[in-house]
Length: 206
Image 1 (cartoon, rainbow, N blue to C red):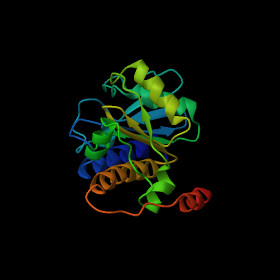
Image 2: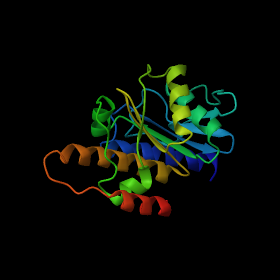
Image 3: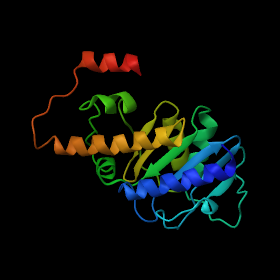
Image 4: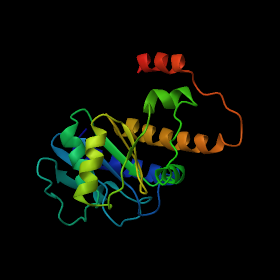
């Protein structure tokens, strides 16, 4: 995939994220790695109407904005550090989805063991302690947690997922929101979670 195709895909998945109700009009950010370049959604633009030409280019090694006419997302540093620490990650999706945000502000955990697919894709979800959005402190904490986790809750902030493609990262983020919703709704009905043996069996598949 070349740079222009990558930009179109980033814009497409950002619109998909908004249309699925996973983020607000100007909230959230998505990036993709192509070689040593990071393509990332800009700051302050309507996430539902982005096109390829809106997407910024950043050099991963030093964070230089190669498209200075575009205002970078304030979380560009967070995305860049994840790529620097995980060579296998090709995409990062960060959103402010409702139920994930609810659990990001709660002491309760999201139960990913209610549905087999969620356990397969997410395992247990790591929560990253609060840090001000857009800061180096947040970027360092999130990127460090992402070294060994593919889906994260950012305390009092939102959700983040990584993957070896935009589709896999988006899939994890959507599954995380589904798991959060199911956890909340399970308070109203009696549920059967996966047993320890069943979770171990799925982990072997993973």
